[in-house]
Length: 364
Length: 231
Image (cartoon, each protein chain N blue to C red):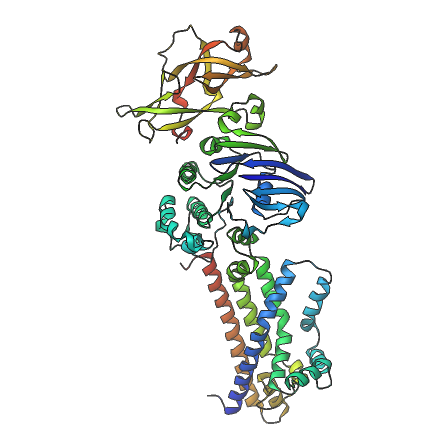
């Protein structure tokens, strides 16, 4: 577990953040640019010195300003993947990968190279790598240094959609296969939805809230901060079957008998997936309405859990309970009053399943 | 092709300059690093003193060397007492003069190159478990190589052409301190030696040209290697 509680003045900006990162899984540090997330990562990595505070990794004190203790970065054993890959231009890919590799990691080399799909690049120089390849090499280089935790500072920034998806998949796989906990910085809720188990929200140098990713996504009060238009919920589902004739995959949500059809996925029946459903693609209809045959839409039994407290503007966000999972929906304020919606009410969630693209689904 | 006298002057010049550059290389890199990376009181003064040989008349530098390193000078006395070394009027003294005159050029080139090194790469090395020294040797220094090569060759060329400080400090002794420029000077002073002087002049130009072209070629190659164009 990593514990950080630090302050640092940077010009007229003050970082005053407390953060706890569990010793397993992927934790996202979410915030807009200028929120202090990169500064916090630098302090944890040892590339900056806090004015005051402590940083502790398990039993190891990295920083304790009261005791004037500051461990230099090369002794912290934290792998860092920077926004730009920062590969050494004068070493080959192989040389880069081996740079921080202790003898004990030699056995991991081939496996990790294969996992990251960079075997054919080993003899190249970094100048001849594409953006996505360079990031993968940077991740491999950091992991081969046997870090106790991997810190990633916006590792997906600047990659195009397909490369981003690819790298996301690699990172997920790493988190699962290597068991190295990951703290990753992002300002993109889609990345976070795809990767993170936990989220810490940072704003103006302070960590405002943290918790499991689905819980954080379902907190209406954080809506404005997580970006209203892209507001979404994360829903877990299971692959039931593939429909090869129509290129579809049938999913079943927990405790829900109505199936949900989405564009064909990669997993096999039985696999768990995480779906990202945008609030604007979810609506509600009364429980009594029978409209189960509308095209491209699934109707799921739901209970209204919470109604956003907007008193002006056209839209209101509401939180639905679908088989125990939180599902965010965007309604017009008029609908809320004409349908006389109230918490506890039984409804049907209307999910526009045709809007769910492959990029919105991750096979866990 | 060359007369024994010309060979003597040329070989002496190359040897003295080679040794001078070899001697100032490590201190030059160290001082360049200090100036490029640290702020300390008196930095401007140190920078100024380092650049003095560039702007002072070389004779003044030679005279100052004589004052400091001569038998009666504080450093000279100590050197003689400790190691039995006496520098004035020896080829080692000529190397000292050449090294001192070339030092600012070396420091300047290395410093510029150091300042261009992406420090983010050094940060990356630190997070990969490299201490300051390992980071310097494996990242900073290789990335500074183009500047070190350019600076080294420039210093070599400057040392080859050194005249004023050398003749003042080490004198003009045939076979000991009579380098190319000094030999040329002697010939120019001797009536009827115009042709020999012209030959030496051509040799000097050719040597300087080779040095400059080599510097450019080496630096370009080093840069290409860094940019990965020669995989």
